[in-house]
Image (cartoon, rainbow, N blue to C red; front, side, top):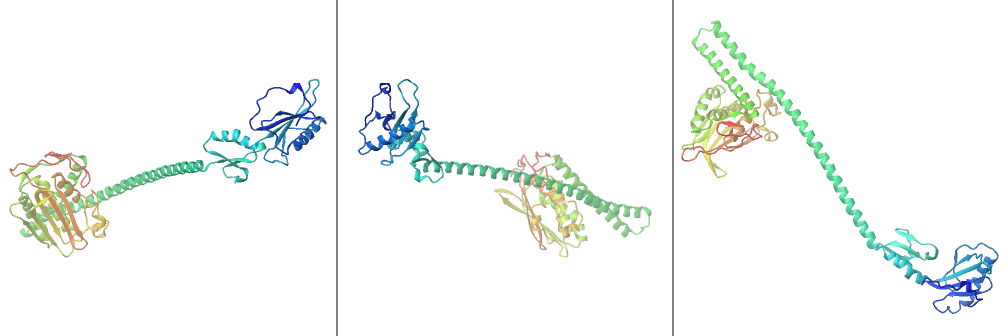
Length: 455
């Protein structure tokens, strides 16, 4: 291709490597401005004809924006053209056309651009599936930019991880909220239950106090009036007054002991003594009450049981509370056995006190709570009897303050057996050291037992 020469167009230009040729025409001829390779065979005629057509439109003043067309003979190499309006003297309106090498455009422009981001790849436009793909336009419309599979997999992994993390955190927060709500509800219910127990306790104590006081007053007034002249009858009245006074004293002692335990001021006077003799004295003092209720009862004390470092009055009160329960909660089968033997628990020698009856027994659902202060089972057989709900809690606290343990075995209708273990004193007769901590709340917390005071 050749054309007229125009010195004004002979300027040095660094043409892009993807230009296969740049041509100029002023409507009279075609001039080659840039041609890195020899013209393709068979394209010379069509190129010349197309550029002249462009130039003619420019000369005629027709609109010629930056445009593109594809030569029919070589679709992979389109041409772009632009009209240049020159005002300089001697120059006409010009048309400049460039022959594009699309493979060079892909190699020198698109691929280096895509290489800047590992997450993208260049694909043919026909592979555009609309998913994570961006179609190019203009000269680059044969291609599309698409996210790589590795990038998509990585993004899925990140999103999945974040989703799991956020879901896990949300679940933890939800569980924490549920747990906190449940905790506060439980605390509120416990407080309400405790308030109800204390209210019932006040009512029960009032009833328990009124009964012996009424009997004591009645019999005392009868004796004082002189209406009872028979010695046997007087002795019977005196016996009732003594019995009810003892009952009243035990009730008041239980209440006072529980209050001291709650306040951490329960005092124990520990001394090394024969627990068998203490239990015998207590049993003999209570024998008349067992006989009055037609009990078959027995105390068995094994020979040579170890001496125990103990508070005598507290151990006696334990036995009284357990015997009171046996009397109160026994039906027609009235039986009580107190068995005192030597035993070893957790490598410690000591004394095992078993108190067994044939009473109504304890329901399985109540066994975990019978040592709580104020607790009385909802069983109608229990509710029909008087009581404060303090006896067993005091028993458990006292045993723990002595460094011992307490277990209960019970079956409905077949009775209950309480097993109390007290560790023995040292062989030389001196007391073993007591635990520094015992329970301040009967049956549940810890109180300090230094030998004289539980705090």
